[in-house]
Image (tube, rainbow, N blue to C red; front, side, top):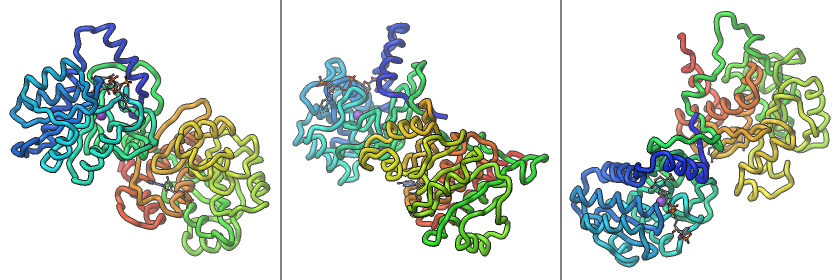
Length: 471
Ligand SMILES: NC(=O)C1=CN([C@@H]2O[C@H](COP(=O)(O)OP(=O)(O)OC[C@H]3O[C@@H](n4cnc5c(N)ncnc54)[C@H](OP(=O)(O)O)[C@@H]3O)[C@@H](O)[C@H]2O)[C@@H](O)CC1
Ligand SMILES: Nc1ncnc2c1ncn2[C@@H]1O[C@H](COP(=O)(O)OP(=O)(O)O)[C@@H](O)[C@H]1O
Ligand SMILES: [K+]
């Protein structure tokens, strides 16, 4: 799991490091890493006038950029500096001037762009207020329009380091070199989409504080997956009870059942309406029909919004079996849900659960997901380009990210089924959510393109097969 830290935590880590090791110059270490990354991005194209254009802000982020500029100029690379506010880190500026960097104003920077091989964005880092001055914002847009690669120092300038929300167009980096720890903007969409490849340089500065979130990697998912062993049988692997679908949405039932089956459910008991049952029967012969003991329920997908939802939900929750509650059922929740319940809303559903606007959830997903988890004392998987797994008590984990092709009707139905299989296997609701969302993303990566959700679901089985250490 990759720890994600806020700007404040990173500052505190830097301060306690300085208190213990006052002689270490972190800015030089940061600049060295930036210069090295710039050299790699230049790929030998060092001949054109103004090969590297460094946009420099007034603080230490600009200081990193200036020392990196000095290092590149020292290698004989033509480097131009644009001091975006007219002010700059004094020692860094001195070093860059001494090394032979030339200075340009805003107009000169814009003119140079067309010939530049690389822009280094050292305008604002973790000390910046979100948003860019309009001249800098226009420069960033022009760099993108001309397809000039951008190397951002610490964060793409103008982003809020602690959020995934993007207020204004700004730099779109090919690579971001960040320091000490990854910040939320590096992993939360849509901000993460502006960072390009994120390269962490920890500068040997330890961070003692609890991370704000943990980002899962494919290796974590493989390690945590419940792989069957020699003593496994269908019941020990977990029986999933499925009550999903309706006359209007029978396909949701089939998709969730396909999801549960391809994620390794030991057995499935389908108890949804006959129209959905018929569909499942013709497509998936291993699914059984009718009541019986189950280890987890999958409820809500494709129910439609009807008066009957509250009773349909209550009928299953009475016995305190763990459950994945999805889609329409999320709006019929009782005040108390059974232990190990997983709620799987997207931003629109969460907004209706909390009685706020969708835009409010999208602007601050984490706060709203925390509120949802607290209100129902249940684990919440907030779906979308970033998948947040939030527990009551506040622990936040982020699923392995996947391609945006998954933004299609039916993906959520499949995902709920995958999570239900994991819940039935005995995993906690948080692990079921983290593994379910991650494995679907990993499968989608292997099937890049507009594949229907059932095709991605079948690919899940292949990904899961790869987790088996024995065969
Ligand atoms: N701790 C670490 O991990 C390490 C930190 N290091 C580096 O230090 C960076 C942080 O430096 P920092 O604290 O000097 O802040 P920084 O981002 O340069 O911005 C502050 C300046 O910008 C100004 N300003 C603010 N908002 C603005 C706006 N919207 N538009 C215009 N101006 C704005 C603000 O002026 P103000 O108006 O607030 O007086 C102030 O002058 C960090 O990102 C990393 O690169 C590395 O060297 C080593 C490891
Ligand atoms: N921009 C995106 N990038 C990657 N995955 C996405 C994106 N938007 C949605 N998803 C994923 O697609 C699925 C869509 O879920 P949902 O909207 O509930 O679909 P449905 O209810 O129609 O099945 C979720 O698993 C979600 O995480
Ligand atoms: K920056």
